[in-house]
Amino acid sequence: MLVEICANSYKSAINAQKAGAHRIELCSELAVGGITPSYGLIQQIMKNITLPVFVLIRPRSGNFTYSESEFKIMKQNILLCKNSGCKGIVSGVLNTNDSIDIKRTQELITIAKPMLFTFHRAFDSTHNPMEALEQLIELKVDSVLTSGQETSAEKGIELLKRLKKIGGSRITILPGGGINVENAHLFKEAGFSEIHCSASTIYQRNKTLKVPMNSIKFFDETIEAYSDIEKIKSILKVIENEA
Image (tube, rainbow, N blue to C red):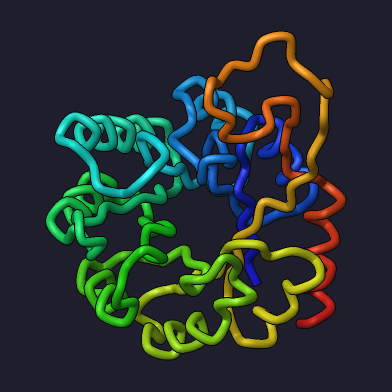
């Protein structure tokens, strides 16, 4: 089973490689669900990481329906990833009714080629996952990152199994969301070929800040989250023991 680590920083990416992970999804700001990392971070990682790197293409947090300006930024970022030698991208676009925006997603896929294309967890916002899956198969998306439309992949495992059965060899279902050392074996036993996890540890640098950076308290600004070497190794060990 392939283990993809959602790396939110240079430190997380280096830790994933040291621990023996198989692939990295690179992003920034996991606290808001992840957004596209900086070009400087992508360049630094491509110089020092030998693992396949997939980059999240998401211009902002919030919903997955984008303005023309935001969509243009997404396309530009895909080209930067291609020119940097990235293996794939993780992206997707929805319509205002949360259905797959087929036209725009197709455009992103075309621009990304020959990189691989994972449709991200925007899939979990769709109202008809079976229809959405068939649409993504028709678009020739390589894989779908999903929690099974639940708050965690463990809670959504029954839908994940159904999606896997329907998708067959046509598309890879990539379970992600709350996967850890305690539940990783469930996905191995269910026959999934890949899992996605952050294996994060929380480090609190300061208990208080003199001046908060955000006027509305979205998240705790005093903590740093990073992918932990030992947690990744533990997940890999569980997977290997289940082989």
